[in-house]
Image (cartoon, rainbow, N blue to C red; front, side, top):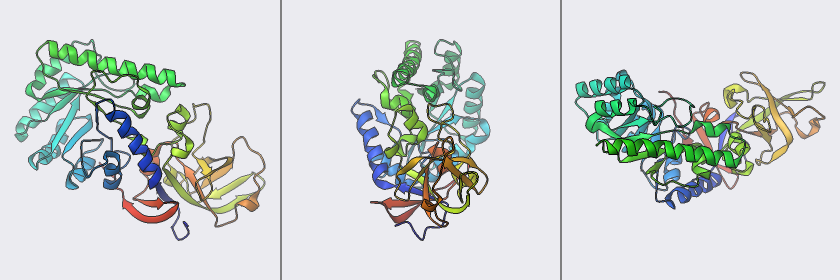
Amino acid sequence: MLEGIDTPALLLDVEKLGRNCERMRSRVHAEGVVLRPHVKTAKSVEVAQCALGSPAGPITVSTLREAEYFFDHGFRDILYAVGMVPAKVGRLAALTKRGARVSAIVDSTEAAQGLVGASNKEGVRVPTLVEIDSDGHRGGIAPTDGELFEVAKILGDSLAGVMTHAGDSYNCTSVEAIRAVAERERKAVVTSVMALRSRGHPSPVVSVGSTPTATFAESFAGVTEVRTGVYMFHDLVMAGLGVCAIDDIAISVLASVIGHQHDKGWIITDAGWMALSRDRGTQKQAVDQGYGLVCDVAGRPIGDFIVVEANQEHGIVARRGGGPVGFDRFPIGSLLRILPNHACAMAAQHAEYHVLRQGRAAETWERFGGW
């Protein structure tokens, strides 16, 4: 079934991917809102097309390399959702001159001045969203901060609207808490855009986004688009939040058993942190999945086996909390699959997906990296 694939290798279950993508499309479109999938995790044309259900469409990126790559593959409506600095405007302008509509974000007067000055030098107008701080998680301007209007004045005709990211949703411990974060997210951008419009600043775009809030939000009133990305694959963090089931997780790393430590109760694999990443996103959740949940070659979890430690090229598998292993079940050379804590971090370690169709390796899809 998977024999012949050099390990460690990134596997993608295309049936699970398809179900995850269809579920989010249906969810967002039923609310009359545009879905602008975030392709920072996917870094693959085929995955992005599956997310959109079409050959191209509006996307969100985190690097200019992503913007350039997806433009070269037919995508024209791109939001670069990381604060813009003047030094990067040249690459963005080059895409604009080739026919792309690449939008930027800023969250201060200094950033807005830098963007406008650099874009004027390049002879382009860059549609720009003002990032709103909806939860104190990262960047952004508070909805009630007067700096919002100063930024709008600086941007002038380049002002396209507002956006936010409800990163605090990843810290929630219940669905009710995620719904509360989602409503706070929505109110923050709607309040901000209404204030801008009341002062004569047309702001057509009202953009929100995180997989937990997109999944559980009770209202999208006033929102025009939803940005979300990890839902395509899901991961153990999302499962721990109740956003998905373990069986919805579409990616895993295929690993080979390379050794046993009988006295320690360890199984050694060739998938260390170079293959899995060092992400420990489930550490603060009710169930700590170590460096990843261990499955058999068919992708079924094996009891309470997790990767308890990871070195560069070695993964140490044991039972959560210790206990007997039954080493005869894991002979040298046998294959295991490891589910990710954080799909973005795991996928970033690999240059291709080994695509599974009905559990069998069918083809490979390119991934890319860099900034």
